Amino acid sequence: MPKDINKEKSINRARNLTQIVICAVALGFAGYNVYTVYDNMHPVPSSSYVQEPSEPDDTEEPTNTADPDNVVYSYTAVPTKDKFFGDLILVNNDNEYFSLDNEDLINIADMNSERDISSFSVVDNTYTILRPVYEPMVNMREDFYEKYENDTLQIYGSYRSKKYQQEIYDRYDGETDEDGFPRAALPGHSEHETGYAFDFTETVNLDYQGDGDFAWINENCYKYGFVVRYTEAKEKITEIRSEPWHFRYVGIAHATYMTNNDLCLEEYIDLLRDKYKYEDEHLQVTDDDGAHYEIFYVPSEDGEDTTNIPVPSGCRYDISGNNSDGFIVTVHKDEKTEIGQETAEQETSAAEEETEAEEGTSAEDENSAEE
Image (cartoon, rainbow, N blue to C red; front, top):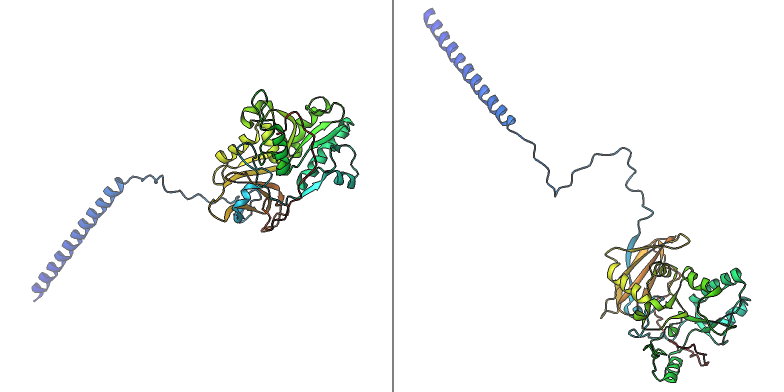
């Protein structure tokens, strides 16, 4: 009996030893495989299409802080027909002006009398001009007088009705000068019909060439929002002979850029359309006083009653048509407003109710060539 017990113990011991050996071999093989796999592992480079997470920066400002320089835009619906109105409309031989018939015109002589301004006069006391043009025109004239004490300047021509422009055109019977320039613009194609333009003369020689003391006006008019509309250098583009006496209001931002870059209005309108669309780059302008502007072009949605135009929230802005195919938005980046507040000085929308215009019936004296 004891022998049988010892035999059984020996068998169990051998069986256990065998199992231990087998387990050891299996563990060793598994460990070898793990080592082999690990030894053959290499880091995989990250995909160029996946953005790597950045390490947190303890010094970084909270992301919910508003960026004061970030202009946020939303859309506003503007009547598509308003592309024909505003202080940047292009009026020339190819682009006709379509009168509102209710322009906000003011009498220059009456306003001068009301404000006791005697530094300049008008050839005819019936001359009128658009209200937004009067103030910068007076400021320019007053600064000129303060600098030179010269009170010989006169307004020689301002707003004209289409009817009066027709009379001027008929007077010249469509004649051109020796170089082929028209002596008078076709009715509907004169800037004077917009109310944004005026002519200077002076009482000594009854002429104005922008020289002598008056050179200051032609060199500095952009600071007040005006450009000398027709220059000798741009005659082939404007198709109008040089007129140093003819000034056109376009606004300080645009006059500054046009003057500094030697552009006439035709070139400037083309530049905005071609390069500075809303979805592309915006034109950045800083005037002589350090004010900042952002300018871009939006094509009109022709065939639709309204055009959706992106406008800034929290900044004053102006919208002007270009009298052809779209709108130009000017953002006054330094003039902050409450979010959602409408711009008080918006002047480009066509009036909903048209009233009958009071046509100018006065006979205006003429320069050697009336545009």
